[in-house]
Amino acid sequence: MNSTDLQQAPSAPSGGKLARWLVIALLCGMLVAACVLGYLGWTSTDTSVPASGYVALVLGVVFSLIVGVGLMALVFYSSRKGYDEPAVLIPEPESDAEDGPGRS
Image 1 (cartoon, one colour):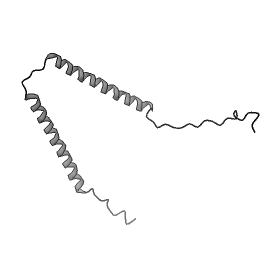
Image 2 (cartoon, one colour):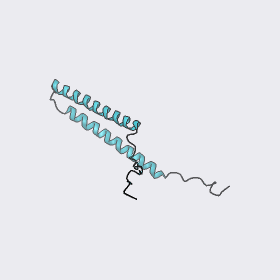
Image 3 (cartoon, one colour):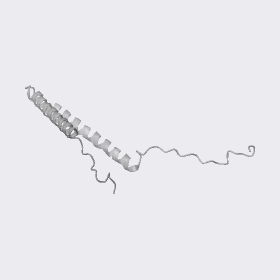
Image 4 (tube, one colour):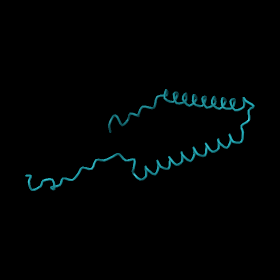
């Protein structure tokens, strides 16, 4: 038995957990701030949106979803078929055809 077998691996520093929680808290705060600003922006005016505006909004969302789903499908297809593999140089076979009768 080695003397290193008895030693335990050092635990993760507690500063890492604190930093992780601070980042999570900061991101949650930013999400809440974005939601509040969105709500205030949505309700701060009494202007109504015409029906054509809602139609344009729905068509834009649907088109964006179709493009996103299509691109993700192409990514998965490309990955499964092996198109994402790195290029490999295949050397040309050495042939004796270049060494004609006049060459030695």
